[in-house]
Image: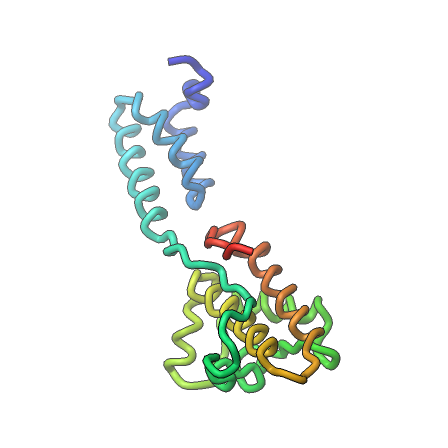
Length: 196
């Protein structure tokens, strides 16, 4: 086998261990280390192979299940829509944390600061245990899903309201939904984006 297919051929098991240790969350890099370790016969190299293989398996098991990224398109008329109060943004976690849109809402930078905080950090208990469980843990796919579904629901419900001028708020919810997709989904979770 030539050196192009074995980029780590000249490295010792110790150097391979250093690469694996500094890339514990990078499946691709760990698989490259495993590919090289297949050719090694020393006891230390075999031990490293087993540890790296276990880490790759752990990373693969922790990958979130794919879900469709929510859309703000209204597919049902107002009569068949979910009750607006079910997705009420006026008394939910996001409102409590300072997230607000529309003419009297927060600036884009403040809204994104709130979204970043809610995704990455521990959140305060603002409602029932069931409600809080829906938010999952910080930096989890459940947290991202709840955030995305909340923003999409707010926008869909606003679009269903006849005679109310919520165009500015809808635009900001949609912008922030795209922000979440680009900031977190594209980098880490790779959920399905709905068809246009």
